[in-house]
Image (cartoon, rainbow, N blue to C red; front, side, top):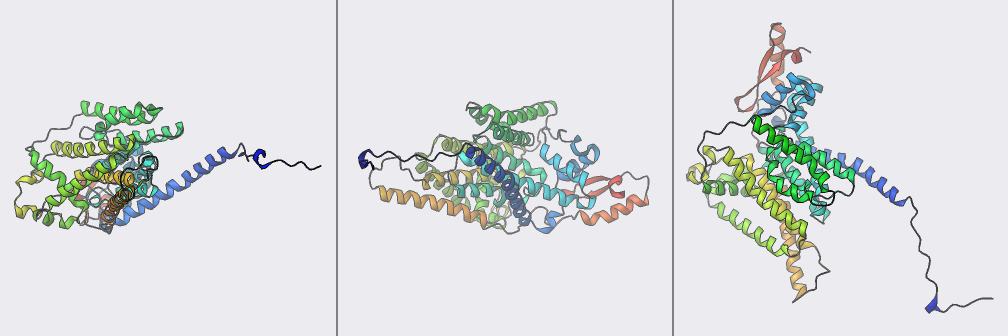
Length: 466
């Protein structure tokens, strides 16, 4: 007999439960995607950095890369020089790159190896920033743009990209975002902590991130993430106390010069090409830079109510760190050409740009992307007040304008540009003569090869005779 059940009391359909192995399968899929996607993305970013540099820069050894890091690796091997202090601080990652280059590459390829190593680390930094910014930026597209800042920053090729010596600036940028990250697992926290340790062991200015480390350590399991960077900062402080850096002898720049230098090196290079910065500033471009900063501040104010605690912390931290890094760098390394307020009109046409503006400039771009992300986010949980449609349209237009401006500024200067290594000297072209010198004089222990800044690199004949 058929039993009819009224629709109002019909039994609910049985839900299909996921099999017990489904979460494990998802975890394995994510792990596999990370293991395959992270190296591929890092390699792609490294290739983009490589092609931003002119060919001569690939084969030119820059500053401390040669007479300090390469020569140290010749003397101490792969890991022997990684913790040797220099000028009051440690440079762990650059020394590690130099050790690998000397250990595994022929002497003629040392310059190419140093450039490639720096490009590869830059690619890794970009990927770490993409992952670590997950709790600050909700849009994956904006996270990609944020990660690409380290690759596409207009001032980067001048003397930062492709040089292990100045990787510490990019590591500082990465460490800031890493401390804003909340790992989902203890393994992820441990991995990020080790990355943070390597960064802090390579950048003494990581000490400026101590307030952010304290706030991060107060989060659940935050101590594990902070432990690596904290150990690195402690090691840097011990080294600078035991082997302090010599005090500068130059006259300190005026506060006005420091303020103008911030605009010239952190803001203006994002707007115009390097070759046009001087004429732009000489024709009153600092007013434009001030207007840009004012517009950015206004956009942040509009986006502030839409931002969560993590976004607000990132904005305040990035703004403070941007100013502190620039000011501390100039005060610790005073020079006559940083006295921008005292330069005449003709001197402004050929003013000097410095790598000290790289980190402050990247942090300003990061603030703009955080504001853009907040403005583009739809806040369905907030009740609309007056004219909700027009208000939302205005917010969306402002957010889209910020993202578009950042994207244009980053991509417009991608093409290979002038670097401080563009005119050589070529490293590989010096090797045949150096090999002949070692062969003609069996008792000769070292030969000197030319590098940038008029410096020389001692190369042991044992490497040239092999």
